[in-house]
Image 1 (spheres, helix red, strand yellow):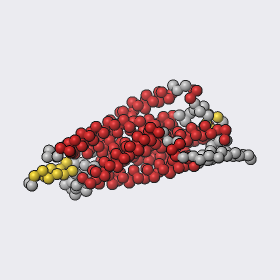
Image 2: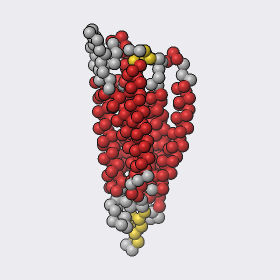
Image 3: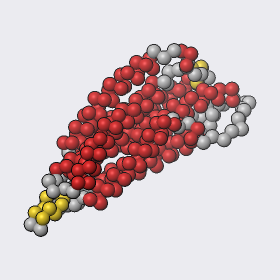
Image 4: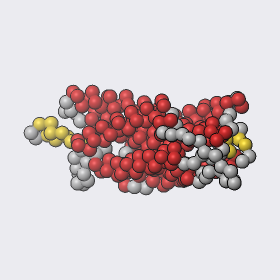
Length: 294
């Protein structure tokens, strides 16, 4: 899938630029903005998140270099997102309540929405909705290619004697495996967020601000991971579908309009991908605030 390869390459270039700018910004952030968090907890959760990202990069690279007819490349970014979510979940599961003969507990009710980054989570939800509509539409419009592989071609009967088709097309051949990965990712994200909210406090009741900072940091990583899960496939599927719609010479006018609309969606998806990648990495770069020794 040459179009998808181009989209992934463009995403990588944009993401690298955004990451450089944001990491530099974090590095020069005044110390006054730091928060007080337990050193051991911050270090352990950060290490496990980085482990998830590292494993995700390895798994994504292996997937991109394998899989027939571009399926591995399509699943590379979602698999990276899955591994990132697993790293966050593993880190949160290691948090234990403070030990000692005397313990205190705050009476409180925590909700997932209290820790989600508002703007980013809204953008991720919007991207997920658009991706769902797009995958449903392209799956319904797909037809078998010349080798009989289902959903890998877009065809149209131009005249009683003329039939045009174009592939690859993001039909069931591609959307089936992608849907499985996306569903697993959503389930894993929900479990991770539930764990973030329900895990015990990492310190005493006087350290609520530091513990909440750890939860918000983890929630931002989860949100960014889900955004990667959605946005990069959205860019690739949009580009591939637009290419198919615009290549059919006898296409109706609305196909052309839809094709150009999908092309316009590509840069927006790539920009959001960069935002989500930056959210994942900068959230973990903040794992070195002013910490205390428990």
